[in-house]
Length: 150
Length: 158
Image 1: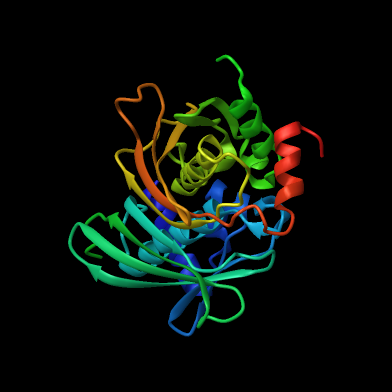
Image 2: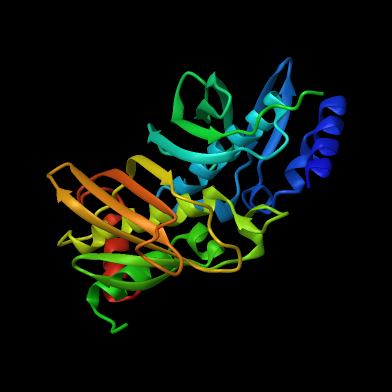
């Protein structure tokens, strides 16, 4: 397992293409998460998808999908930046919905607030029109394995 | 589980939400005390392909849906209740190839806000895989589309 993910990570870093890594995660394929490198940062994208709608009246993206997108973004962000040998395990997740997630593309960016030896705290912001007007903010704690020595 | 008006309303509500249909969510039981929604195991919601464990996002969708729908158990008339915030504590990973049950109830209803909580489990409700707490905003019955949607849920016509 470790080798496959490590290989995919190495390849992803080398080419700046994270699609093969995301393609290994069925849930990421289901909701349609994409990831790109912008300078030294990672930017996550959730393209508009009818299957992700949870409010037929607006219509708006299901809150659970927004949460899943943000949680997945945080886990990948950690995996990519910490060089952890395993996918980080989620401990808790807390999110605030600030605006309706309309039927359009959603973006997310993560920030590691603190990375200890065993636990990491990640803040996630999701937006649609502009980053200054987030549709949701979240924070998550992950259990991480000791970083690889190599 | 015997059917009742709340169960029927909840089932119709769920059938109108596209993403819930994609996940295959269905109402297991419902009463004035709360309701339970089932998330069937399926390969498409797996988060870790090596272990087959489902992704936390699918669990969050289940619990956001269950908590949001638990407002149907306490409100006299249908109201759109968007989530204000949601917090999930993961007790342990879900076992692969097993359905997940999400129970939710409202423990405080005010004029503007509803407080809901719940937990997710597989075999044993005493051994939850996650605890959830969330707050939901009451939009009232005047929001555009609410009456028609609420009517369709209550009567079963679309």
